[in-house]
Image (cartoon, rainbow, N blue to C red; front, side, top):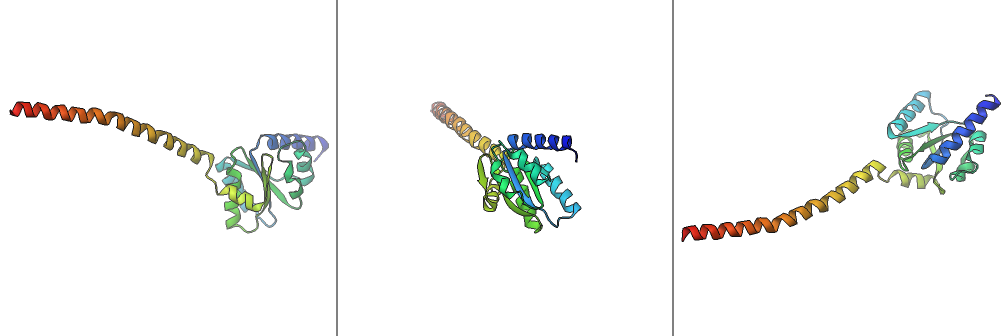
Length: 172
């Protein structure tokens, strides 16, 4: 890799670190090419990305970013998983690590907050952004339907009362 390619990679990684909501660092020693392709496809489906970069270049790219706290984790064969959704990359990495023991999660960062492996696992257990949005919409819609039912109920009761009086007058 020549000097200009390295500079391009560093600037690209720096932009990724600036815009990503979460970055997960893991060791991938022993993963086969098929396993890596499977991990990449799962990440892509979740809206996340996996990148294998030289630790020295990734370390340079981390300078001046919020996720600079992951620098000490960049030792050995590491991969970086990142996403704009705060949960996606962590969720896929933890799920993949459960089925494949060769992927070892070292930690990560969410904004300025450094995460240890347990923190990444806790983050992965949270619902995704889309799930949270669906729950919010459900919570917002539920009271609106209840309000509509309450508003319509007195009118319906009043109509039944008038109807009963009208039948009573007709019968009499």
